[in-house]
Length: 231
Image (cartoon, rainbow, N blue to C red; front, side, top):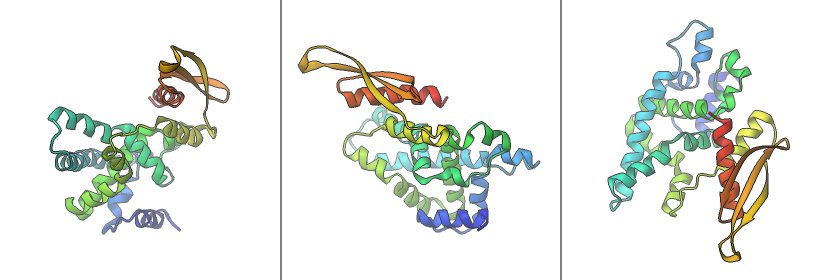
């Protein structure tokens, strides 16, 4: 099965009925790959630019309709959380997009296929391709379906930024290791304790965080590690 066929199968698996595969081939062609082959304009940068705008419009429209009582400031914050790198990387990891991206040799060596920023940019490029291929209304349906688990969390009142899962997916893809956690300190009375957690990779500490529960402290530590390892 060649690359184009694999892309078609991937898009079919996630329920996207497409018209022109060329848009998606471009969306999955990183600039490093295009430059190596002397085709600098045949990469996903412009589609990423377009997809970013389309995604913001779709998410803005959704929030405007779904939360009529929220102020402009709160809507802006929710939108920022939904379209941020962590949310996009979460989608990319769940869809296993990295196996379909064409990367240059240098980018492969440096671990580009697991870099959250690159994966998030690719998701935006795919949305740009989808918009050009089938139009805004159909694109809106597919994007909201893609975001369904995240939007469900939002409706439940807690938009979970699950950094433990993000860190685990990243570390397994990049380093083939699973992070571990330990509580290194606790303070305060029994009814109001605070915990300090430490996350380790290959027995080396990569982040610490505090929380009012052990799980909260571990999430905080994972967030610190995520920020440090994915600049």
